[in-house]
Image 1 (spheres, helix red, strand yellow):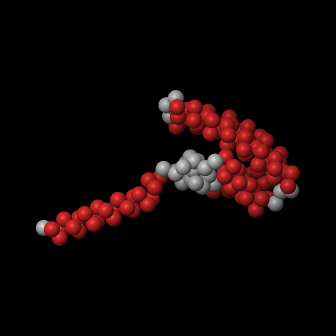
Image 2 (cartoon, helix red, strand yellow):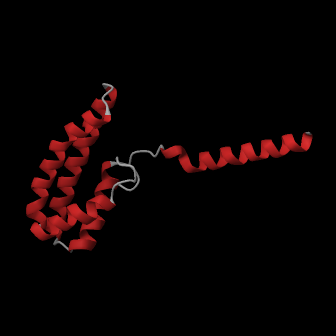
Length: 131
């Protein structure tokens, strides 16, 4: 009986450690600067823009991330749901894209929207580590 209890306790402890090591999906939100840097690297490696355009793109994304963070904080504080958040963030995304499209050009913007932007999202949607 003692052996069975010891085996059960060991399995329970190991399972708890595995779950805690995974973090349970509660990743801390990256800072605006960290997210801008990640986008900067993707855009620079994909499109090789000149320095002035990269600085403009960084500014566009910094403004976008600050706005989305502010909106997200307001909605969470007000008890907003996911669909309301998505609905209110849509104009921010459209404004970002409107500024970004002239910087990248039509072909590069299409590549950004179709390939690069989706690759930066965390699986399951939302912002986080891979954003």
